[in-house]
Length: 217
Image (cartoon, rainbow, N blue to C red; front, side, top):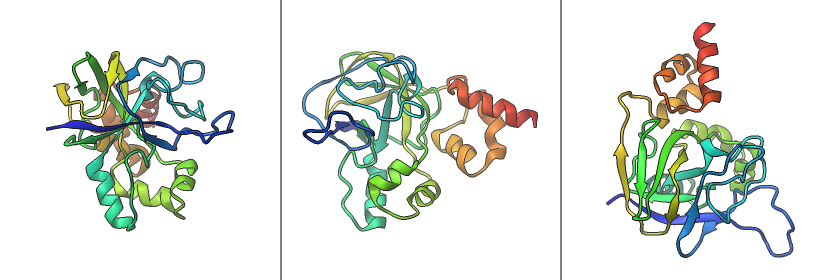
């Protein structure tokens, strides 16, 4: 059964007044409230109450309210890197089991648990320098890019609560073939794919603008 293994929130060491990054996420207990955070720069940051985001220029906001990563993909990296990768290591808010995150369609909706929470797949995560520093692996950005399993950002359609063990049910799949993997390849490796993304209505507006620009060039 598809489910949430853990819910992960940013960890700030004792004595640190403010986090410059929220990538150090660790599993938390109990039900966690999930609500739309608003705009990227002026809103609440993360969709997970109690979580924090450092760089509001690139992270957070309604289109990136929740970040999901599959335990199956973490396991692949764990074997490849020959090191333990606990849930939350990649900065994900929810670590899933039994969900094809890379194959999720843009606009696909997930109902999580029994509290009415519904999330919508929006775009892949792209690696940054902070992620490389977090892993401590030279060349990690390139390695992760070519790994092809970026995880997915989701927006909040219906707020609610999420907890470890909640079932994940796909309640809507749009009528197109644009997956998280497709968007990731277009963004990072195959820019000629960008115009093909425009059939996905739920794609964030910033990516639509890039796709239109590519189509016009």
